Image 1 (cartoon, rainbow over the protein chains, first blue to last red):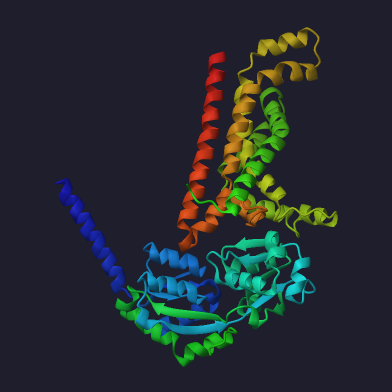
Image 2: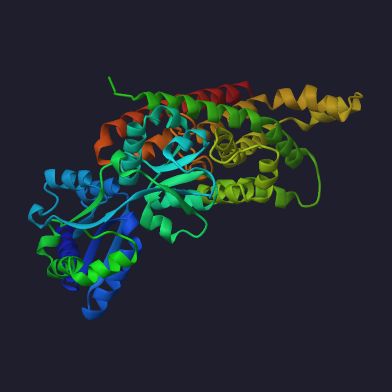
Length: 247
Length: 227
């Protein structure tokens, strides 16, 4: 008897799961810096496709990769660097045929006006926020720029590690750090913080957002439809509006 | 051998440092509060008790956020300190304060239990024999509450080692400066390539906690035997 009940519960759970797939859910795993742009794109897609529901998960690209690897539901994966997409590809988490480029960005140093105007000025500062380079691409780009500029050793004990690029920005907004390494698009959303300087492009590789359907997402018709919407000209207009480069 | 990065050794050292400083700094205050609650009759005692125990039930993140509002650059105490050239947020001092606030109730609780166990007749006898209240405090109450003090401070030390929620908000996560063991594990845990590093530090954390708790139990046994 007990076994029968167990089997029945398992079955009904499975049906519930299946039902939720049928209801047109799209699970997004998207780099934190794309939050506003992706929200707008999802909203406008949902308007023309009734019944589609988005479950959005924004965070550090590395953390998202880990979640997907651990079995978190995800249909579309967009990262802020090539490394974590490559990682997901090597572990067969994504449908590698669908990998494409979503957008581009640039790295800036943002903070209270007057604190710094160049990379060399950073040495004089007390606290600088960067995303933890272990999982946050913005932090990885920043540490690479420090190394190339030859100031990585001097900055070592001044770096506050944030869990994603938006936490970095928040530290700067509250004035608890002298400045933060964020993307230009993040800094444009800030209220208090201003862009103090652009990080010279020769110091770090171009910020590229690759996107792909996950293995599960490739089987989800709604996810595939949204994925092609993300590549449309309409999507590019939205991205441009938020300050992203699309080519 | 488990692989530990140089920043991990820093984290272990910082954790011990923060826990020790928080505990030692809290002891005089904890003693004072426990004394007030146990021996002094005054209005609003319950309010004091509730406030002392509040950090025990509040989510540590809430404690951290309040501390940030208080001590931050624009906070009312923080702005005063800032003018005086003292910076707390994102320093080790902030980590100590966070741990002290969160661990304080544990210290006070054990101290109270210890003090309530003191034979009142001993206290009364010392007073009738002519000791001033501070004499009684120093020569009767203080030595007799030593077991409670030891138990409380070891418990608080252990709690401080694990402090995460309040610490990450006020002390940030600066490797080599404010990154304690829990913060380092948190950073590893969000990266898919640092699984073994996270596990190694978790193991260190378990070992330290076990050692401290064993010591705590040994002390408790000793206390029980003495009675």
